Image (cartoon, rainbow, N blue to C red):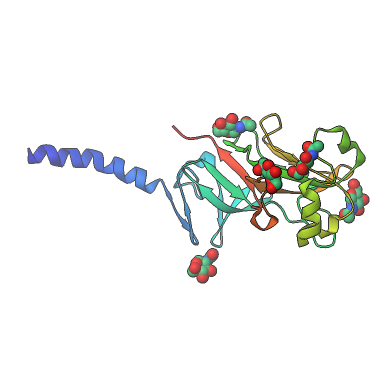
Amino acid sequence: MITLILFLISCLGPLINISALNTCPDCGNSTVPFPLSTNQNCGDSRYKIYCNNGILEFLSATGTYYNILSIDQNANKLVINPSLIMKDTCYSSDLQEGGFLLHENLPFNISTHNTVMLLNCSQSILLSPLNCSSNSICRKFEEKVDEGSGCVSTLCCHYLKDSAMSSHRIRIRVGGCTAYTSLVDFKVNESIDSWNFGIELQWVPTN
Ligand SMILES: *[C@@H]1O[C@H](CO)[C@@H](O)[C@H](O)[C@H]1NC(C)=O
Ligand SMILES: *[C@@H]1O[C@H](CO)[C@@H](O)[C@H](O)[C@H]1NC(C)=O
Ligand SMILES: *[C@@H]1O[C@H](CO)[C@@H](O)[C@H](O)[C@H]1NC(C)=O
Ligand SMILES: *[C@@H]1O[C@H](CO)[C@@H](O)[C@H](O)[C@H]1NC(C)=O
Ligand SMILES: *[C@@H]1O[C@H](CO)[C@@H](O)[C@H](O)[C@H]1NC(C)=O
């Protein structure tokens, strides 16, 4: 009997250890839940993120790092900080890279909980189904949030990033729209103080 128990422990022990080892160590104050991986010895390497001086970062397809603001392991989601709009301009800092772009072959996409604002757009945007009216929440962003002040009195629009759109990019360009920001779980009647700035990404669950 004792032999059998010892046998079971020696067989199962390594399995238990492997799954424990597979979760990455904390990064600064942030836990790194499985399958996210900050180095090749932990997590699942397809779900690579970066730990840079205690700050978790997500690398886009264009080589830009975005700070990770929160992770919800149960919902397979994380929220990154949208790139900042440079002071006294209406240019997002990732404008040169065309905005935010995800590799299509990675197990991440942009979730359907993001309300994106496009700023300093050219007139051709009016042909799109986006909300570019004077009631668009992008006007509030320009008027009430410091970061948007460089965009005042340019054409701007907002839209819910739903499943009818590319879930791998938020596109900006010179001659189109030159800046953007995004809100997670925006609700129509919510006051601007409770706006939750971020881009929510979803990952494919591991089996
Ligand atoms: C970690 O938490 C401590 C205490 O709340 C705080 O002082 C410190 O700045 C945090 N470090 C980082 C990298 O966020
Ligand atoms: C545009 O968005 C605003 C704010 O959410 C809303 O009040 C308005 O009805 C929308 N307009 C159109 C044309 O969808
Ligand atoms: C808006 O974009 C155009 C190019 O599309 C640019 O020439 C102009 O400087 C931008 N405006 C601001 C305030 O950044
Ligand atoms: C928003 O608030 C207005 C006025 O308080 C109300 O009439 C409207 O039904 C609300 N809309 C939603 C979506 O809750
Ligand atoms: C994004 O990925 C999730 C998880 O795999 C999937 O359920 C969802 O349909 C994808 N969304 C889009 C718009 O492709």
